[in-house]
Length: 308
Figure 1 (tube, rainbow, N blue to C red):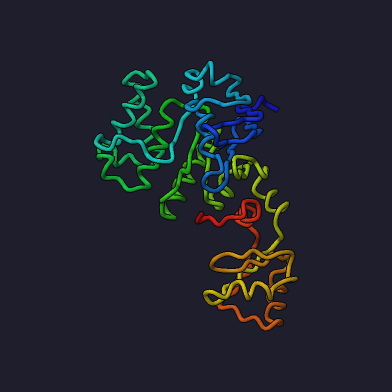
Figure 2: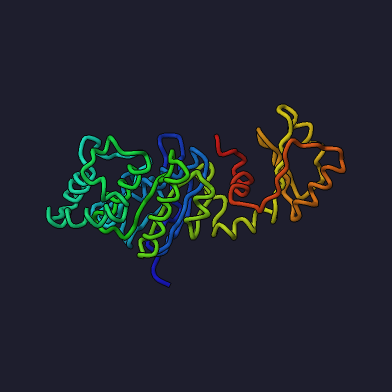
């Protein structure tokens, strides 16, 4: 096995009396896509900022490429690319000017920065918008440009903080395709996300964080197998009746999850669970049997809905 590209041991980040990251252990292998999954305030972004060498470690140890960010921050930053949660593009410049300017931050010669810009705009499917002012781009185009800009220095490690927040489904899928292509090229990626389907699509391994701690770790499939049943029955009842109807579902399946808009019944046979619910006289407005997903693991481990 190659040496891990990122090694964190008992990593802690505090802001005064508040502990944002509470003694986590993480290892990321070269070429891996690794995810931090969790609700707002779980400690994901604080962890990413420490990995990105822009926020000092309070205690514990952190190594990237075998180097300590406290003493070799500049060397590490030269080898990574960062896609922040909020776009930090220069909106009054053109698309290609953003890439040229960012290349100069890494001391690339002008000719080399322009050569790489051409390649990256093709990769990001933005070649036809090279002369467009950034302010006129759609949200999806801006995110693709942010990713292209983060690759101007040919990074070995790419950090992505909520890469598809606010994008429509079509734009998200285009972005996923770009990230998958980077994985095929061997670029190690570490990302945070609120989206369960995104984590399932992109991540080889991930950790679920809550209140600054890691509560589960593994591949998306292994986490689903460990923490959920094979199927889930989703029942939607008239508004305001979930509590009453959920009580009548007691004993059906392995457990129930009460959400604001529906009741989830976790069972190995969802259709059998639905038959039993009908046998008890329950008449939901709608019923859906589906395979268990990473969202079910998230709800169990963090006890929160995605809207929190």
